[in-house]
Image (tube, rainbow, N blue to C red; front, side, top):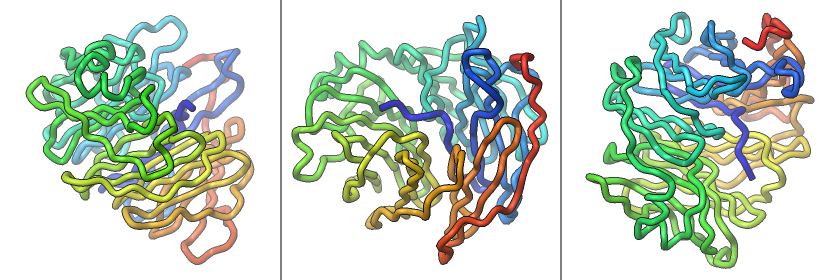
Length: 343
């Protein structure tokens, strides 16, 4: 299973969502868009960074006071433009990664000091020391897929792919991926050039399943991971010393996933379903049947969810409060898409 780039994340500044709109991928009429809902607000705004072709997809990561967006290469581009904003997308500062970002939502991560990780399409990981280095395109290689797979923890899990990067509570780099060895979750942490195994132990009954880590995120309370073990999805939370793993939920064909505040996780397993879990110690909760063409979910306002449904150039926002049993249409956004422009 490959996680879709359609996702959302929540920062102190607000909620951000990524969805693809427009037409077919084959004719390059698919245009990835970024939306924001400021903290305390109920309405979304289109804030896609201008001037760069986004047919290849967008990935996002948040710093303490800013948002970093990466553009995956498309139509002959061999590098990934970047854009950073500290004012909720009103203005953007360009940056550059002279390489091809991986096609996963967890392809970039920003640490508290501005240190930034980038996961490339070949599984290698690049690092920029500061936000200024990101803007200047000053990156260096942290590791490669082959080097990580050859490390002691990589050999122990039979690592075959890296799916996400993040930072741990100690502010050191983390990586997560897919393992050939059954029953092993491939989460790794790096300190002074040495990688160690840092993943959760799976509950009894999953020892015969191969495991993919679909997503990895850093929150104020610790790390959160979304695991695919066989045909089941599990969420896992680390407080820096130990992991807590949820009960499983049927995976289906997950079309989108995302993380929310306080360690919450949401998944669209397909067939119009949505499953959410509030955090460590919680249980999976099935939401009411999704509105047609829902592309992604976003936590809030409050303890509810917004469903963002994309159809051509129209984005419809539906809202579900904690106590509600049905979705309510609350907003429609017309996105100015220039079909045939590929930008």
